[in-house]
Image 1 (cartoon, rainbow, N blue to C red):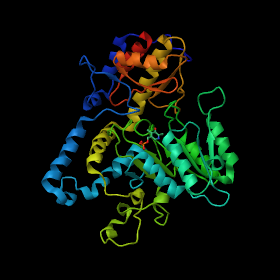
Image 2 (cartoon, rainbow, N blue to C red):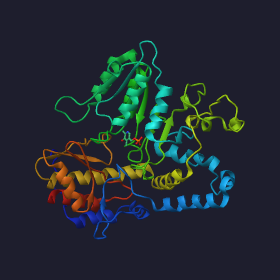
Image 3 (cartoon, rainbow, N blue to C red):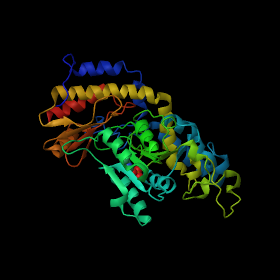
Image 4 (cartoon, rainbow, N blue to C red):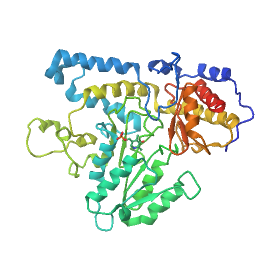
Length: 425
Ligand SMILES: *Cc1c(COP(=O)(O)O)cnc(C)c1O
């Protein structure tokens, strides 16, 4: 292992239990359903970076919508307990608090990849010399597909118009300075920087404010994929001056498989109702929406990018989940996350077998809950062995096991069990 464990680290399970007992956020664990193994015992679930656990309240809120649908049918748009016509408004404040936005800058809609496409239509407007998109090499494939297809749709060649910045030869992480110098070098040919806030494979988190400022300094815009950031790290998207951001809600946000995604549009763009966009009737000004005229009039704010009337049954679990985040608070969750992930890292440093190394950086601000552990050999077999010990993490090609203690429902004993299983395999 690369980092040495502090000599004083108490390696016992009892110590982990004591830390859990002193955790002020401990009660939130009981608000989630948990899968069990074949013997009926709850599994140690460290896979919330891939699919978060189900909040118990999701069942209640979905059930209420089913009841209202059966009781009210079409009248439910206006007369159900949470009228469907305004359902997305329930996220106005909740969504803004989650990512440090102003009310009106965040809307929950579609899926992540759809939102990336919608944002690129509005915020990647190649003109003259200024055409290029800068992204990270090894981005999540869907992001790369989205960017490349936009470039091709305008008759341009991704090889000429997409700049990729990756780790240096022999290194696993992208140096932030390399991103910044690539931005400066692209200068007035750069139209958009679109990077993942936390890299899904390595768990590396970038300084969003700093990179956004560098993009602005050369006259480009900055959009962020926050799939692995939302619900994992606190954000101040408005103050960081981010132009747009998109995230999915089924990872750390626990809103269920294929959940409705989030989208942030900075107020200075939201006010520009003339901005080009792919439009749908739900983005139209509600005052004229039902006039059913042929001319689209965008409503102000992120809401103006909505296409369709909101999917109520899919939004109900997101409402259940975001109410929990709102009660816990991202700053408190992040403080616990740092402690638990740091503890897991220290246990691995003390006990892990030779040939494995945590790739995720350690400095404050450079990681969230996830640790990506690279194995010289046998990663796939180790992942299977972890599962046989009742620990759920995941495996990413070619040699990475990802473990992510989610602070809402994981604690120190979970980290202890994961380290114990990994070291026993
Ligand atoms: C999870 C993830 C996606 C998935 O996209 P969907 O449209 O939600 O299926 C895309 N990009 C990143 C960076 C991700 O981590």
